[in-house]
Length: 58
Image 1 (cartoon, rainbow, N blue to C red):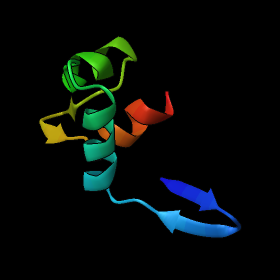
Image 2 (spheres, rainbow, N blue to C red; image 1 turned 90 degrees about the vertical axis):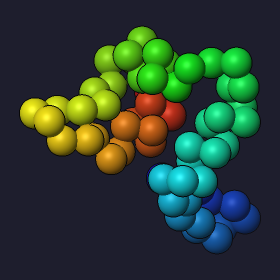
Image 3 (cartoon, one colour; image 1 turned 120 degrees about the horizontal axis):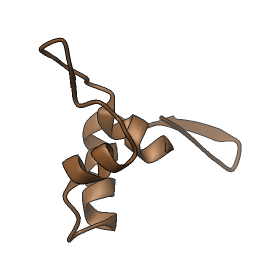
Image 4 (tube, helix red, strand yellow; image 1 turned 180 degrees about the vertical axis):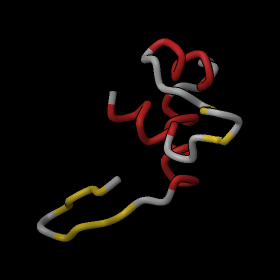
């Protein structure tokens, strides 16, 4: 995920996005939130590494 601040582009890591999301929604289960927006956590037995970012985008 890319964030632009005063013309400077910053890229956030998955861990930073996850931490920000957890802080923003302290009493919300992130897996339930992903399910609500139909973002797959796993597909064919493999972890979807981008599920947090995809949830944030939706």
